Image (cartoon, rainbow, N blue to C red; front, side, top):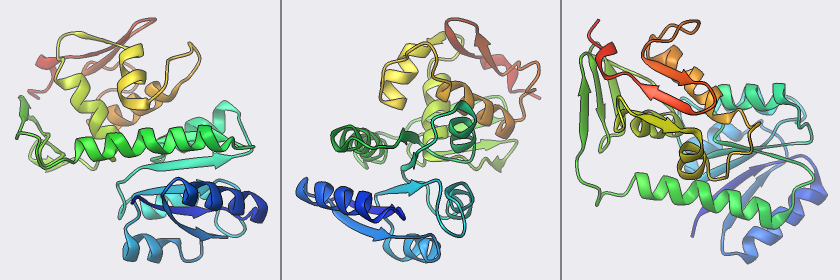
Amino acid sequence: MAYVLLVEDDQRLSELIVSYLSQQGFEVKHLSNGDTLLSQVKQTKPDIVLLDVMLPGENGFTLCRQIRPFYNGPLLFMTAKGDDFDQVLGLEIGADDYIVKPVEPRVLLARINALLRRARHLSSPSLPVQKLVFGQLVIDKNARCALLKGRNVQLTSHEFDMLWKLAENASTLVERSVLYDELIGREYDGLDRSADVRISRLRKKLEDNPLHPYRIKTIWGKGFFFVAEAWDE
C-alpha cells in the first residue's frame, strides 16, 4: 500500500482526494498547512507528496525547497494557477509533476501511479549494477548517484533519471517524445517545457555553460544530445 502525504488547505477538495485515493487502496495523510510538513516527511517517509502551491503560511514552493534535502521521492504540485511561470518555478525547485485545479480524480490517480511506477522501477534492488564514466563524470545507476570531479552532485530522483537516459545514449540524439513518454509520463504536446526546465537544472549542477551549453546540447525542434567527450576538464 502506497503512502500519500497530501498538503491542501481546501477542506472540500481534501476530503474528495482522501476519499477517492483511500478507495483506490492508498494510505493518505492530510495536512491543512505546511507547519509540520518537514517533520512528517522525516518521520513517516511518504511514497509521494501532493503539495498545494497556495497555502496559509509558507507556500508550496517554499515548502518544496525545505523538504527536498531530506526527501527525494515523487512530489506533485497542485495549483489553481496554470501559467508557465508557476510551472517552470515548480519544476526548477524540485517538483516531479504539476497538475492544475480543479483536479479530476482519475487524472490525479493516473499521475500518481505514473510517478510511483517510475520510482519503484528505478529503485528496484533486482536491477544490475550499472556505471557510466565520462572523463570526470561518474554515474552509478545502482547507487543512483553522480560524481563530478570526485564530488557528489545533488540530484533529485527525476534529475537523475533524466541524466541517466541521456548518458546511456551518449553521442546520440534523444528525442523529446522519448523523454516525455518514458520519464515524464505523458505525450509531448509541442508546448510543455518540463523537459527543458529539468535539462536547465542539470546543466547548472553539472557545471555546463547555461548560455552556450557544450555538455548537454539542445537540438532545437528535436531533442537533446549528451556529449561524451565534454567531461574531461
